[in-house]
Length: 396
Image 1 (cartoon, rainbow, N blue to C red):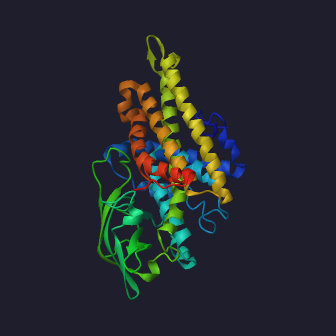
Image 2 (image 1 turned 90 degrees about the vertical axis):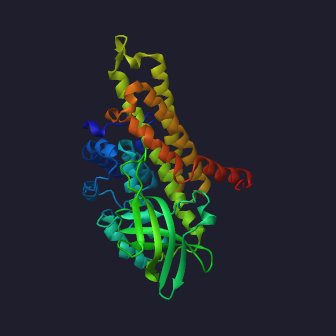
Image 3 (image 1 turned 180 degrees about the horizontal axis):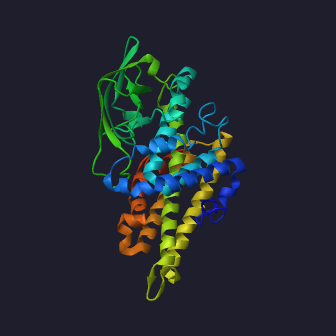
């Protein structure tokens, strides 16, 4: 076995052994791809705050897209949710921005079409997206709305014959500056229910402007979108989406993916700190021999191991088709909180070197803040779980 196939140092309980041989092979292929093809690029582009479009071509040949969507992509049968989660972890272990680019396209955008579209719509859009000949984005969050978007969506849709007219604005939309298909969520003025629309690149009235000055996810091209009398044919309305309840089904699945990303950030930061502790000498010996450094490393490994175990069971609930909103919400709230602790401990181990990109940990430390906030804040996910266990809603 070569080095890339060895068990991860952070996989202390050998969770990867839960995968079957075929799925394990896919994971190891992704690990080698991310290490050899992606990792050499990320610090340069993170510093520049630019997306390296050459990544799309690299991903196109990696065979990692559409693994969850039976009938699309290179694999005849859908893989398990456990493998899907570990792939999200693996990508984020290298870089959270690149993993988010891929997750927005392969997860949020493609899954919206797969779960919310008709068979004709799936067949029309998903093959090109599976091949990454077309890139997707997911436009939900608004400039004046975050956690309250379910009941207060300001972007509107009005039917006009065989077309819909969209007006409003969206913010923090990953991939939107270059995406071919943007899934736009809007409130139907006729029935006040949220509907989904596939807005194709070049549609008049659709403008996406890149958000500058970010301290996290600097490779991701987040955009602020304005929609001014954007006309979309009825054929581009997702036929299976009739209300926000349908949208929530999509978010339930993708929220668990964000928790796997948080695990990947923890692992990336921990691995960097462990390697540094073994090499860095102070007072004539490696700092790995210092009790306080070992304490931070062990606490980090504990957070990783506990989070991984929670996510393994979440994946099993998904595979069994019995997981609920509160299951993914608890995972997102818990794992991202543990992630914040781990990246802080890892950065401390590096001392002053922990604030420069050369050692990777600064990037993990900054990117953790974005993961902590999106797909529902810790507080909102806590309230979802709180309602489930008490039967009482604390939502304002």
